[in-house]
Image (cartoon, rainbow, N blue to C red; front, side):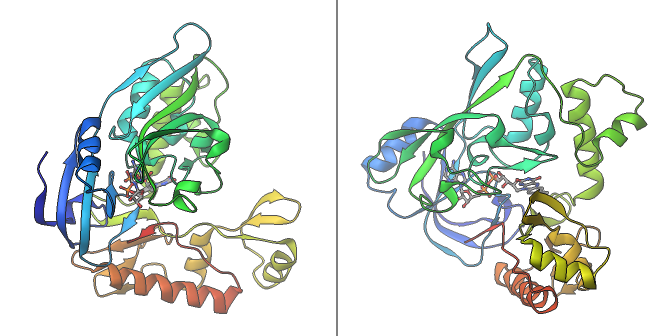
Length: 336
Ligand SMILES: Cc1cc2nc3c(=O)[nH]c(=O)nc-3n(C[C@H](O)[C@H](O)[C@H](O)COP(=O)(O)OP(=O)(O)OC[C@H]3O[C@@H](n4cnc5c(N)ncnc54)[C@H](O)[C@@H]3O)c2cc1C
């Protein structure tokens, strides 16, 4: 393990933002973490997994720790419920395919979400009607203040829509090292959400397997979301706002076509992408920062944008949406 100086992080974040880390280290084994702790180097750090949910806005005068610890296994083999464990540095899309190849049900709708397994609980990643909290069993995290491993079960994690305690009250206090999931050998597939059913019909699949659903999700995602390899981005930049029924009544009087998803009697989720598009931002470009021309929820870096330029654009969008719809958009991506 070697601590490197003045390293560009351009290739370590999917936005492709070129900032420098004064100190940078790749952690490949759990023992490396203990060593760094013993040397007193974990007091002020930034952990990077796949770098697909962060906007870097300035050079970093702290230790940047790229977490690569790998390894995964199936712990319980006999019953229908199967516990699977994975170290944090495993690639999430590969991990999902590995569970499917092992005949397990549960993670297929979460196929192809970029990033690492260790980061998946932090914002309770979700797609196509499933969130990892639905399949989560527990995690083990290295406490930076004590150097000890702490276990968090599902109820300890405060999971919500793109939220957990690791993104709020416990932010920056732990490095998630291992995650355990509760999957099944058989069960129902969740195909009602989004275009999965249509895609299955297109492929003449009547009795889908998890692999079929995964293939459909991968195809739908590829048709909708820009690939960070081609154009820098962090997926959805904003959360979908949740409003109450009175707010919804007022807005829907003005905008008859407003889409919504009813969460509860008094809570409606509105697609942030629709608001941004309706406000005229889709495809707008300011320098090398822009709003994607096919998916307004995604902000992009056309090449040499700085993180602050993307953030300025985001703040202008937030202000405009507030003025036009009286809705406060919240940023989903971690601003660093
Ligand atoms: C094209 C695209 C599509 C996406 N689609 C979705 C989607 O459908 N649903 C969804 O929920 N998200 C989506 N995302 C967001 C992203 O994939 C997820 O948030 C993912 O979990 C981020 O993982 P990462 O390892 O890349 O995180 P990073 O960007 O590396 O880190 C994110 C934050 O977590 C911290 N961190 C990272 N690893 C650890 C650790 N082990 N312990 C403690 N802190 C840590 C970092 O310091 C940072 O603050 C998308 C992103 C892209 C680029």
